[in-house]
Length: 407
Image (cartoon, rainbow, N blue to C red):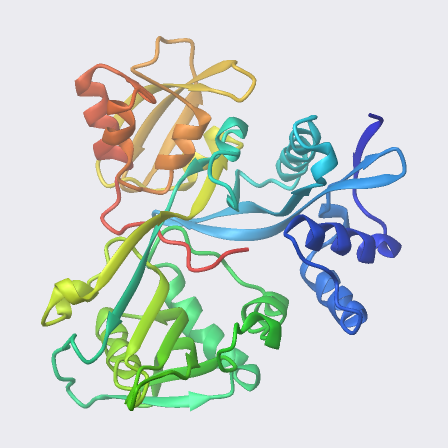
């Protein structure tokens, strides 16, 4: 195999998309080539694509989108790795490794302290240094059986055309952005060409996307994006409301949106694929058992610059630890972390580590997920009990990290 990895040229966009769609089992529709290629160019800088070639034949695809990732107390630049496929004739021959290596070099050159991705197959990315940094909860319930406390009459929901109200939705999202680690900054092209893109083939027999905006005293404080799917069981309505995104500036606004979604006539079955793990919904329902909840892994992170990443975030408790971090190549780098509520200093040191882990485990705990003690019990974080307990207190965060979207 004569393998090379390089960015694609403008004339290779259609070939790249064809390989990408083939990798996920699909095809390019004959009527969407130009429009989809324009969307692709709007979302992805061509010099941040990593196409693998065996001689002249494209056999792998990958790309990165630059985001700001919210972390405890701030935001850090993140390279969002996406569109990763390998032609089935070339799997397990180092193609993916070469593309990820190209991405890591590129992200470091762009000053991105972390790389993030959503894993189509969870076993793949651990060996490349990515740890599961956020989790998501899929919730579903029959609104006829789940009661919520009555509202105070302050919030009012309006249905809007999302495409004509991008600024309205953006304003709500940006107000909510800093409240929880794991969220991503969104550019205007990202809103238009990704979050609000709604082709019929994505609907699976459901309606077009609806947008419900909650106003409180004239102030927009939350929104829900959802679809409806009509169904009848005998003579009884059994339609479904499928929520794709629910964002609010505070908990009362979130509850008002849930009240609305649970009150749509003829559509009692409500599902949301991506609630935070510390969701309050079950505590608000009159019968918590009626809310079905399933846990899944979500955003994976690889820390590319340990010093920059650890100094960028804030910490709930002060503390000092020497950390030994094993890289993907097996080499171990050691850092002294002096953490506080105001920030941190992280410097290389030759001292013996108090706690040792590989970069995958560091990615899993970086934005405050409560994974430190389970990872230690699993043998992924090593050190004496007191040092591990100190690490847990330092890196934990009172609000669970959550990523609201796949990229």
